[in-house]
Image (cartoon, rainbow, N blue to C red; front, side, top):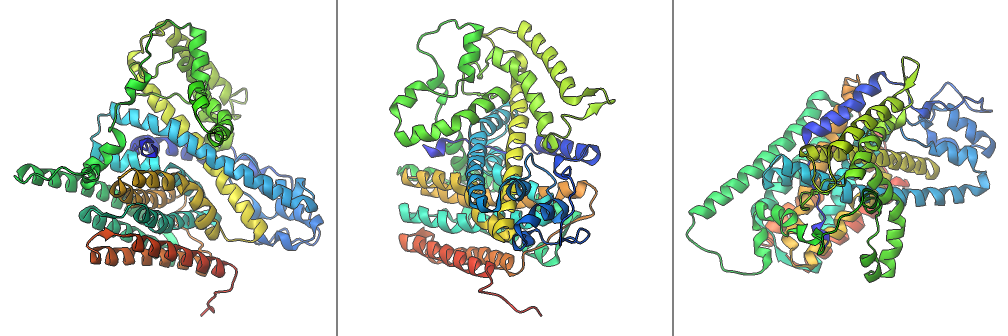
Length: 584
């Protein structure tokens, strides 16, 4: 079932070290390839003034390439591909629809890469880390669970906040995902399975989310996020974690003291407390039995390597539908590349998923991936002392460590320090997600330039839909299987983490690069429509749900869907200038 997908927590120290390493290197390393485009003179183009990059489509076809290459507003600070240069310099003007179609397909595939990396590599390693650190279910649920569930949103926000021109993309995505989840997802759950919501968790999560939205609304009004505000976002999330843990402890204490036993009922009653909600997601079934072979046989080292790199289960392939097979074919290249570069430790398996030849290969390949994804590979080719490139040093050191590990271990017994592979897999998969998120942000900005759309509308539509599609299917499946309370609670818990940590950490990392504060450039009236719609939906839920005695019906779900449709229409009309306000 979709609920089985293990979306796990945030390790603050690890993520902070990972991103601060990239930040520290970014402060003194070489510039990325985005600024290496040659400067060509443009006829009729002012090369000194910074012009809005979206004006390129108003120029003659012969002047567009020079405009893109000389206008600073068209340059991106990260990523491996220059999408604007590809559209206007490598595709003829009459083939622009073909270029857009190819970019749209590549965007969909990037979302697929994000989903596969997060689900099959990032989250399992976070699960292993939480088990290794022996974290309680409460702490793991509101940290690892939320981080695993919102990894694409968090990394997209961090990448977008690195440039003031794309900060609107991050705000649009975070606000847009908030409106989508609190209306479409919550309304769909109520339509699929009407239920009675848990009162205290609902009120707590809605109030915290309203405070987070108010902080962001105020930051937009001020047009800047100073250091104190960035720390305030992270501090508010820490306070939310403490509140969840204390509420769960008080609930358990009251249950122990109570002599009244609840009547046995449906599995839905188990989700009343946050402890049961988290544990039902993480430890409801021991999947280790599925991996125990019926017949034990001695595999050779080469066979272990081949099986470890094989992303296809032939028995599952024969039993699945044609649509599943087609999607699997698209996933195979991504899964093979990730199996080759990202180690995965699985505590549910007897051997912890120890594959001696593959894990030794990971000791060489994973550090190489780390240096080739930091700052889009700028540091992998940097030469130490002008002689030896960094990637060569990493390969030499990794090969030495892998050789020692190979000869000091056996195929059947994992080593004592096998748990370290979970941390290596976490770092590698996190940087894969970050690299894919960087490309998503860049390609969305390029499509916005072509269609003359603001970053905010791209964030609230394409980016928000792409990052939330997995959660939509997951929550709907939980509701159909009889757990609507669990799915409804997940609607608010995840987006609280996304907005507080996404904005707070993104701004904090930007400030750590030498800026005194982060400048926000909202795209006119649209961002206020977006923030107002999110705030209005939360206020309506805060008022209407208690008035219904927390009994959510199909009529309430239909009202939420109509609210989202009305919001989307108003947002698009605002974007295209049909709805506008005169400047005062």
